[in-house]
Image: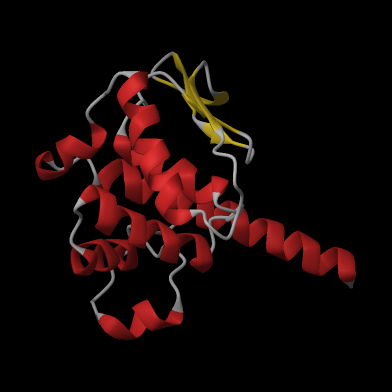
Length: 170
């Protein structure tokens, strides 16, 4: 029974992750979000990361994770090219090629702040950081996440009732 619960939780996490990644890829491809996806020098990313960390982490950890540019971890292959994702293990945030941007930094900062899984708690913190540091409209963000069936906290589900589509199916 315990093994089955663990497997179910793992399966839900995989689905939540795919839905969130698909949402990020499509929602933030809109031109108005280009400042969030613009590639930045690692020095600027580190400065922003320190600012976010100093503001968000007083009760988490005292030491900011090392923020660096690197190869990332292999994800998949698309159109004959290998795709790599950025990652965070709590001590290091590594930004992969083409992901040295504010959007990816904020996503990985949520992990560094202690939210390991792409569940509703992660999403709640992520929405907060995107609103505060990325200037994203919270309502648009939540409605977009609803369309992709991203795991949302119950309080967000009640905020904006939206006719969802099948975009979130995996």
